[in-house]
Image (cartoon, rainbow, N blue to C red; front, side):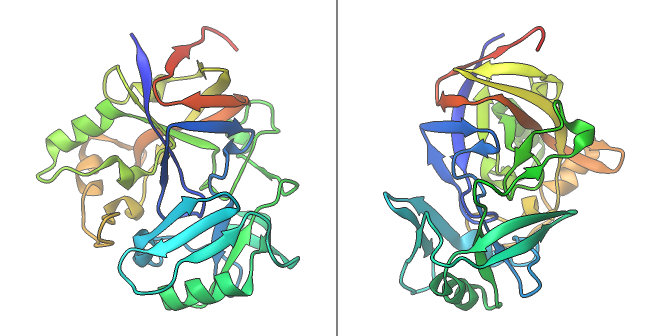
Length: 270
């Protein structure tokens, strides 16, 4: 059976729009730039579309010196975010059960997001020396770490998995609902659930845990409107121990570069 990478996407600022790529660098904590920035409230707790669905309407692009952020509808000037934060202010940002050290980016970024989202918030960057270990229960070496992601460096989903879901829905949904980093073609629906060690070009990855899905998948990424699907339908056939599973979480074993069109090769051992 042949598996081919069909899409690569990164989400530089957690819970904002993704960026489709033809090539990406796989670093120890995930794809380069992926979820290295996060918005946090006045208590330094992370903010996502779960609290503010309007985040779905904010697009992000990578430019030579940093990120460019725009709102799809609001008439507000784009925000330029440098790769290097303009402040030295450090805070401990709470993400689920973890506390992650971040550097506040700039007063301008804070003001922009506060205006657009209607909620006082600040933008933080995770520097290279801020290490957030992944759950030791699903670790291989106990040293794997990640960014401001929900918990793991990379998420992979097969196109067949989405196709099976859409065949059950009255209105199909896009892969954007599930925010994967890697999408592949080939194989049966949810074959990724069984994956362990594999390579993509010169990167080596390992599947460790199916991804439990939440209400964020019910927010239309194009309009920010909330609904009941696809969770309602997924509950009927992807409910395992009261968790709705869709996609596989990956750890990075060896870094490298991956591209759309690369073949995914399963390994028999480590």
